[in-house]
Amino acid sequence: MGICGSKKREEVVSFRETDGEIKLLIVALNYEYVQGAELTCHEDAHIIFRIADRAHCCDITLNTDRRGIGGLNFPTRSVVLKHIEMVASRCKPGDWFVWFWAGHGVSVPHRSGNGDFDQAFVTPDEKGRLTEKSVLLDDEFAEALETYVPEGVRILCICDCCHSGSICDVDSYKYTHEIYQFSASQDNEEAEDIGGGVLSIAMKRAVRQLSLKYPHREFSIQEAFDLSKKNAQKVTCEQELSFQWSGTDPRNVAWPLGYAWTEYAKDIPRRRVDIFDLEHTEDVLKGGDSDGD
Image 1 (cartoon, rainbow, N blue to C red):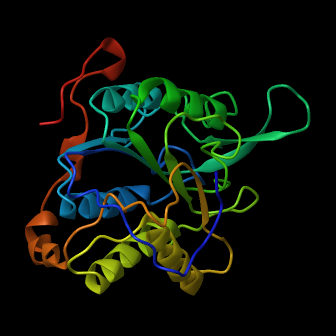
Image 2: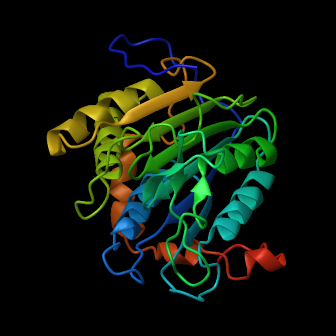
């Protein structure tokens, strides 16, 4: 396990030259049904979609709260966990399971009452209330990844939320998968919403810059994080991006969502895509597993 930064460029093992695929799950919540909690995280969903589409990712699933309370697949903890199970079930060895969360994050007292704190993704209950009981705890999230993601599949988690430094429990859970986690903040920090999350905006710029810097070769996960962190520091000094990993040194692992700079020529039609078509059209808790139309 590591928590690091690096300036030296190491040999990067290619992902594009393999038969591996990317299975991307985007969960983005705006919380428009809770006064004072509103965010602009659907903008972040558009950002990660465009990055993934440029990387020719063909398996993208979206779960949002745009339909409001009572809407189809309103992203409660159970619905989000079901989405993880469904997307992970389509993975095979050599693939990447990519988790993207844009929403609130929170620190909550550990259920043992020992004075420690857990980190959690703020999922609403069925009535749209944001309560301590309704959140998706880091322990539950880690267990879901370990249980549902098949052996031989690597995991990338991008968590654009507050209090997210250890929200995937990379530093404490005994994962059997290789896992890499980008987070918008340290556990004790809040993350800013500037018309989109700082991490999402900084990462978008970093991937673009690296695609131009290395037009004919892949760049590493470490390089993607280092430049994202540098970009974020130009935007705000109120939060510090966090990177945790377990597995192969990220200096040697290709960023799976990389693409050739020529992909920017296709951005005009890409911006016409209604990403909300990527949401499931059946109730996932009742066994519906059809892709969005």
